[in-house]
Length: 107
Image (cartoon, rainbow, N blue to C red; front, side, top):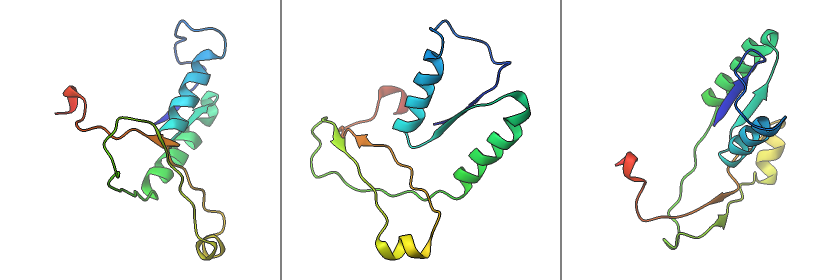
């Protein structure tokens, strides 16, 4: 999940700072990023999001068990890759839950 909030966005009925905390949490849990910027920073934030979407690489795997439990997910670069691609940032969700079927709305 990616998001940009500028100061002209409507306030939802949360405590001060709570809305941003929730959106930052959602972005982190999905491997994305959330920006809180003034109107003058909106274009730069959007360009950052578009670059991240353009240069992303997706990995997939088949879980060893469909158990509906939380499992930690860790992605690392090898030493050779770190040396070759200096400045690369890895962003990934920190856990996954293998389930037999997707939600009804996605079928």
